[in-house]
Length: 50
Image (tube, rainbow, N blue to C red; front, side):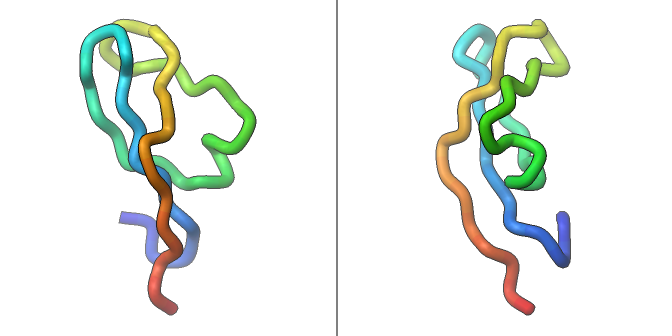
């Protein structure tokens, strides 16, 4: 878990893999799936509680 950053929950359309990524890294960038290399799609984001 990323304690100081906004987080995005992403899912791969190709294989269905899920990943929690820092929102800054996912914003406007195609993040490849670690399992099949298809692009991950952001499903939802949230801000961390500070």
